[in-house]
Length: 165
Image 1 (cartoon, rainbow, N blue to C red):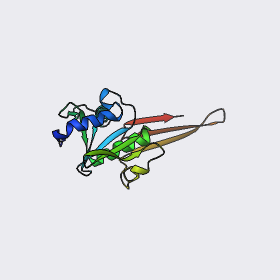
Image 2: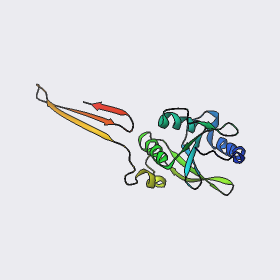
Image 3: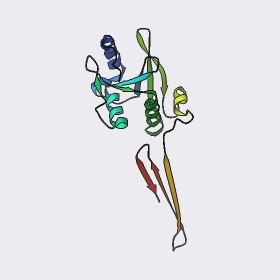
Image 4: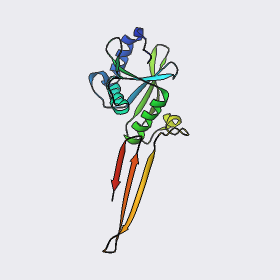
């Protein structure tokens, strides 16, 4: 994993903390990504780093601390696309992408459930979905003359299994 320049940490930490309490433990609000090296990789910080580590890496070992103690997780492009798809389309949470222009961070894109225009290239890229779901249906007649319908869906990518009758 690449390390973020320590020269930037002081100003960067102040910027991250100014967003909405991310480094004070608040996980409320949008998931915030920070573009690094022109989109070569991305980072998430503070409460977002903990969320990404636990939800998508299933370990806290990927969390690294920057020079002044900001918890940080580096994310490659493919993993970021999966995280954004899952966060916006399945967990119904907003996502924001910040980029460094000159010496300041600016909001480049944002998406929310129902308003995904900024991330359409990532969310709906051809072949981008790594979801493998299997669905089964069973229709059975009951002795009282009505039909019973049972559905089951197993999704390998989210490790979920849902049933309804």
